[in-house]
Image (cartoon, rainbow over all chains, first blue to last red; front, side):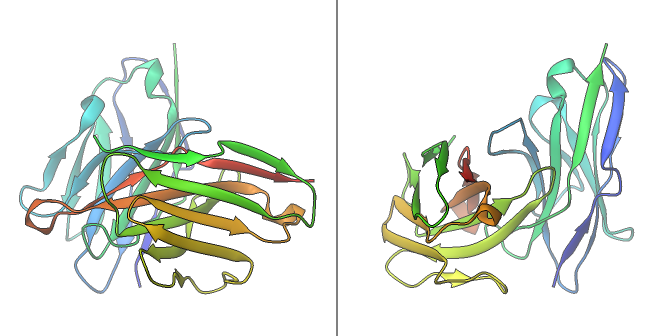
Length: 113
Length: 118
């Protein structure tokens, strides 16, 4: 079975500051890794995914994430956040490219002026 | 990108009634759809995997007689919450799997349905 840990339930940050949202996973097999964003009362939107290849993955809205196999991590970063980035962010894993997803508990990113 | 819709976006019902939620893939055919449940300020929990033309596969602890899933076509899956009770109040989200090149399928999520049972 797989599990995902997002240690930070909330991350407050000022606009234009950099941010890192942490994600660690556990699995006995190789996994695919995803980051999703959820705005209030909406479904999930894919930010980026790691399937294979380069460990640095670039996504939409200026986000990127780095897969670190030795540390079993897939932290999400953005060099300069905007107010509109305020949302809930979920890290997820699957054993297939579109198999059922196991989600972390989410991190609330709150961007203020 | 691919679009997945859900209907209704929100519903309020009385305890004991049944509620049907539809999930549609609008611009692609989805042989597989997933149903998730999300409690306030919590993560998404997979309830079941819906396969077109066959029975759904339910996750452990999910009552299949309580949450009826029908995937009658390649673009539509429905979730019926039977004899709903207040503890069934939640945000229900579906996703649909779109086949991709080189086996890189991808899941696309619907906007969710907020169910409130009085």
